[in-house]
Length: 129
Ligand SMILES: [Zn+2]
Image 1 (cartoon, helix red, strand yellow):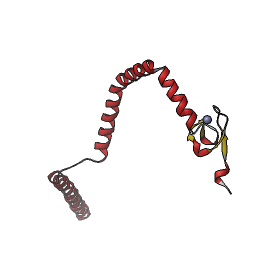
Image 2 (image 1 turned 180 degrees about the vertical axis):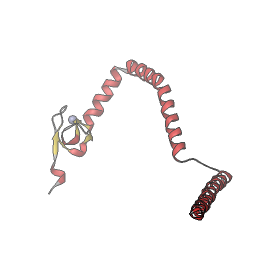
Image 3 (image 1 turned 135 degrees about the vertical axis):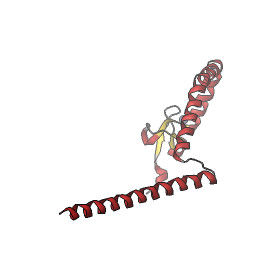
Image 4 (image 1 turned 120 degrees about the vertical axis):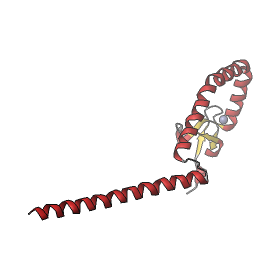
């Protein structure tokens, strides 16, 4: 098995090249772009040179439009993150633990009390008979 033997013909220059010479592209054949890295580089450069102004104004526009959305994304992420993993101080943790213990002992007291009342009720009922 020779992994290196797999080649792909570049759509732009027509040369068969190793897959390593193509960028990854999930939708392309062999999951690679149709043009080799070299050609893509040249094409990109030419495209950029020919469209400098349009690209820079597009980027400006894009950034302006997305600034708000991005900061909202960050906020959502932050809130989510905060909700999942709250950062508590030592005192807050101790307070939380104290409340937990208090609730637990309140439930214990309640159960004990109910058990006592039940026992008394049953005994009183039996005494009547
Ligand atoms: Zn090429």
